[in-house]
Length: 246
Image (cartoon, rainbow, N blue to C red; front, side):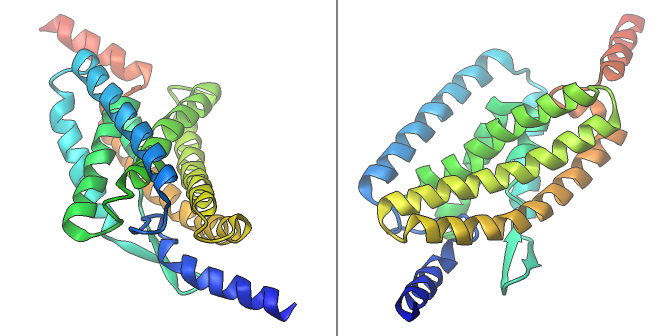
């Protein structure tokens, strides 16, 4: 029993640098790193293709503003129990404002800049960090938010609020689960230890993610709902009337 407890404590101390989801260099083996790189590069290429075909010129400045906001917000840490801290990931927020494809590009750029300029996560495992925090949060968060919002009421503030809150929280927890499996498959720490530490921490961090995302989305919903990728129908109707008057 003492040996098992000591092994858990040592494994947990090894895992502690990863609790922010930014995996450093040397923590993933070559097969796992290559797999996440291939998936990330493939989805980024698809996102570029879709963005060029589907998005209008007005989306480009919004992408820049969104990237700047998420980058700045990620610099602000909030404390959580256990002596560590968390920060906004922003994938769900990027998805609900820009859609999953443009949102993916924004998140990829944010994590590349963080890794290259601030060493926030390793460069050799950048594919895994983009996959965990960008692609899962953006695609998964957006489609879960959309399903919940449209089920409760596409044009209602309540539907948007519940969708954003749940999608933001779930995206963080799911990202931690994927990161845990990557660490376990790489042999860095036992999978059970990785899951116990990562998920328990990110259940709490996800609450902070949800609160920040809800505050930002609520402000935009009340001031400029047309900036949403799926704006409420009343906004679309108002825009159509204004264009017809012109």
